Image (tube, rainbow, N blue to C red):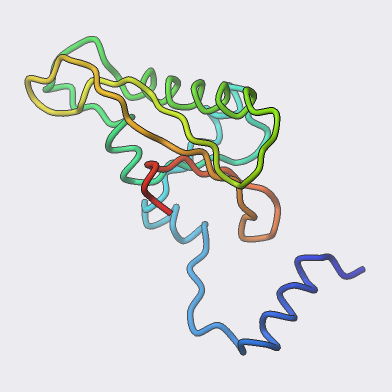
Length: 142
């Protein structure tokens, strides 16, 4: 049986020719361009694989213990995932593939103690095999 993804891929190849280069989600995870957070995301209620872009992870999740106590990466990741889940559930009409949301976080830099809003997006797209995957990115990232 031919799927829609197979038909679309065949049409695109016929129209444009063979791709010169393909960079897969699996390669991006291996290169740490994307950080796979699927295990924690499942605990937060997500059904599909979830990854966070390197830049979003640096802005909202990463924490250097030298910056002080009271923060840790697992708690900061939980905040990012929980707010993404709430943002996605609050939508009654998903008119696109992206949900904008934000999380208040202490910046990961020495001496920072005031929270700042990190503007994020939850992006739904087909994964390497065409099944749905989710990516959390900074709002200005693609």
